[in-house]
Image (tube, rainbow, N blue to C red; front, side):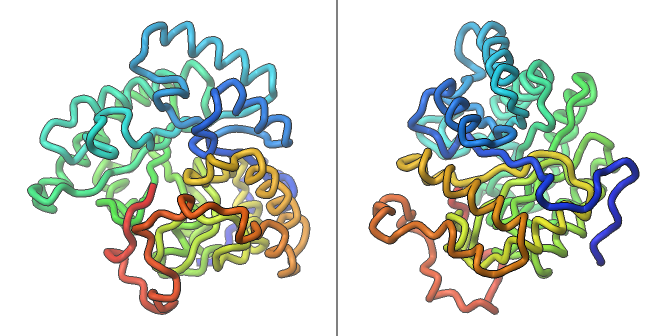
Length: 337
């Protein structure tokens, strides 16, 4: 599939007009108010706000008041916003991401997503993003799929009522892990208008069968949210720009050519230990990549080896040298969110 012409009314295909954002899950050690200020001061256009314990906890008291305060803060800083729902231990202090829509009792997950939709509506969010989750071993593939479709239908109903756009993210290692899986789910839900796709550029390199720019073209008509990071083939590990294998100028050009006007938000959830510095390098890299097709931009954001503490690389991450570039079974890409 070729890169499409811009949609009617979209700006001319120019990657320098892309709106850059940064994910608050990469500022986990900052107060939300401080994180927003740093992100704005660095020149970002928006923020991907992950609802979490310290960042607009949707289950803490005074939610209406706190949402209003965040809305005022975003407006004063001139930041757009998308809502992300990938907090690791918000719902269960013992199990990462549990419960998901695939568990025996997904009640708390569904309530969380409903609250996320309402928060998104109140903040004027461009999208509310969510994913399927990893299939529990005791749950059959068909049962997990049926649960996912049912749960997503409930969330779509909530989004329709609130007038909110949903971005469903294929996530390596989860039940819906690639674009083909998203298409199947979209069809199973009868192609709802508000059910778009969140595309993580790193995931495209990790496991999709096409070059990354073509992945953008494949989903252009349904693209409502973009996460961006570097990655290596077959290894689900979010890397700083220039550390992985992605050639970014053609990717940003593909986004512009598709007429995409939403946020392109940096997704580096394991770099909170150096958030301001990483965010500064990231926007410098992306601006350079948007302005030129020369491969030299890849060197702008490579952090010195000594600047990255060992704990920044998850122990379970598959070493790059152990995964040949041509070996990409999706089931071998573990979840490191």
